Image (cartoon, rainbow, N blue to C red; front, side, top):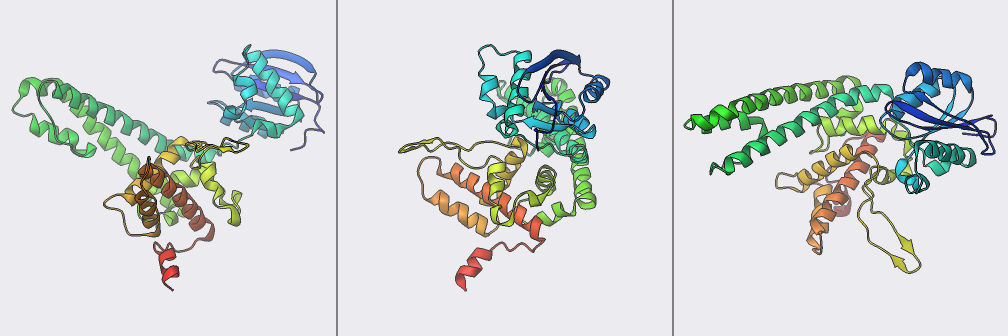
Amino acid sequence: MNTTTTKTIIGIDLGDKQHAICVTDRKGNILKEFSIRNRIEELKNLADQYPNSVVAMEVGTHSPWISRLFAEHGLQVFVANARKLRAIYTNPRKSDELDAQMLAKIAGFDPELLSPITHSSLCSQQDMLAIKMRDTLVRQRRSLICSIRFSLKAMGVILPLWSSSVFSKRALLRLEDQPEVLGSLKPLLHILNELTTQIKQFDKSISEIAETKYPQATWIQQIHGVGPITSLCFVLHIEDPNRFAAKKRRDVGAYLGLVPRRDQSGQTDKQLPISKAGNSYLRTLLVQSAQYILGHCGPDCDLRRHGLKLAARGGKAAKKRAIIAVARKLSVIMLSLWQNQSEYQPLRNSLTTAI
């Protein structure tokens, strides 16, 4: 985007109740500072008051819908990556007003310094809602099961490691001969049973969304160990597979935070953990898929052989490194299948080597 043709630059520090606004000209001179309430009408008035302006804001809870609103009104919008703005979060005099000033001045000088990100579309966010709500229920169910286990363990009652989906039913049968204990736990076990029912309904809904609206997600499920949730989440967050050129498919690993951070200076090049950039939930799903592929039930495939080879080298955290490597390679294969609409060959590299 070209900011040289705009009259004003608007920096916005977003808040739940109100937003701090700083309006500058192209040279960085402050024209006006004020605040507005977090209301659609006031945001629309701001867009009408400064047409064709450049707007800079930090990524946050409200940035998706507010950035779309400004874009619909013809404004150029930059959503800054908060993790890259050290000038803001390390400021010893940090305040909402100063944050808005800094955003406006950086956007006027060089918007690329904001490390701008692109939000998912409204449609993708709506379809992602089912996955997020399912994850919330799964976390609640896990928390309740842990609470029940720890409480019973203190009384000498140790329950087997049942699957979460059958825990409530089996716990009821196991505690039938202890009515004084079962009486206190019945409400929680009933809630667990209801959570399991709702999670199954979300599973069905997610599968239907993938089949009816996103056939590319079904295509990606050719990989054994990648289910509807992982494939749909991958498609919804990437949205456009062509954002990664055919020769740069490996960039998807960096986009999802599955590559090591780097701190190189002179002769020093430290070995650091992964960057953890991008969406944390999608990264977790890919890691879980990698764990399954490398587990006892994992199918024989190039991914599994690659991971086991890395793990066999030994050394500190060899298994963890292997899991991350498989997750990174898995993301590249998923992107490749999506772009090419090709059949998945689990032992493609091995067959090529044999020939």
